[in-house]
Image (cartoon, one colour):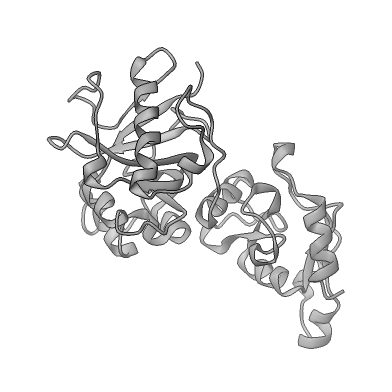
Length: 306
């Protein structure tokens, strides 16, 4: 099938909020329902168009990841990159689309399509939708190898990015020619969602699955050279995450949880944590997403208090 492109219909409020934020490394293109999204693989191009009658493609990004998330977690992961000024504003927009009862306080699940290297075109550079676009499309349309429109869209985007001042896609992709995958540059939000997902929404140490109590942590901090990638992540209960970052606990390259003696010495406490000492932590199903032994060694040698 080759490399695909998607053109999706955007919420106008979402677009207007984000076009003023060209500094964002990633955005969450969310849907008010939790349906799965399998139209693209990571590295393919996700474009968005305005509602009719403004039938123009106005921006896009590199597709990185998709998942169904409680709206509270989507806000925690992406904040204003959800295209809203506050969690309340985002929730109000979800309520509108779902026609929800104002008294319903459920943490609605939304579908998040995470886009990295997002770009928003100046109006003079907006791209008319292809002739094959139908007015009946309310969500998105996929363009595959078999469609001539796919190459035309790819070239139109590549032609406009240098003019609009957008970065990322234009820097990562070849000029013209056959569409190719672009390596997504994961941001903090995508990292949180990815790590939460690959650990099946359970703490790697305790198995705790109360989602608001869990946090995606970096093994090697981003500020110390760590990357926003699965192999540098752990899903931990919030208190254990805090202790991990502070060096009071660690995970060995053999995936054993270790607790520093300093918790007892400094706080005269920690019985619950010492009960976990030495146990093997949970690992992702995919070996490619498993812990990086070098990152674990770095934490043992540079952070752990022993």
